[in-house]
Amino acid sequence: MNNNINRNNMDQVSGIFNSLSNLEPLLENLHQVGIEEEDINILMTDQTKNYYAANSNDNEFSKNALGNNNKMSEGLSTGAVAGGLIGALTGMGIPDDKAQEYNKALNEKNSNNVLVIVNSPGERVQEIRSVFERYSGQKVKVN
Image (tube, rainbow, N blue to C red; front, side, top):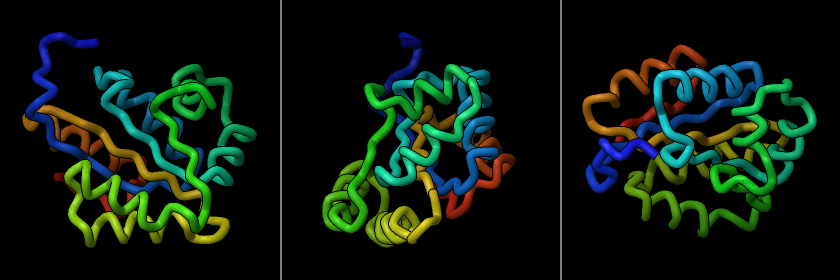
């Protein structure tokens, strides 16, 4: 844990990723620029989680992010999460309209969409947003 960061005053960068070829380098790049694992949240359906776990490269950071026991990874039951996910996202400070948009994207049939949310000090938000865009993040939002 980086003790120099005030975690009480963090902004969020969030976006949807729909390709393992983008998700793995995104996670690796975030790690390389000093983003702590505890500041990365990954949300996906159980179906998507199983798909990515079966198709992941031998990359320790990605394996940790997609692993069954890692706090970063949240497997969601398709269909049953609508109210819960929207409530959880709005509770994290994501506007309701964006939370609904993310919920819809995560539950698109056979999409393998993943929502990545990074908590970041305000001065690093644009850097993180650029990383998201570099790896084809969709619906990228700063909160």
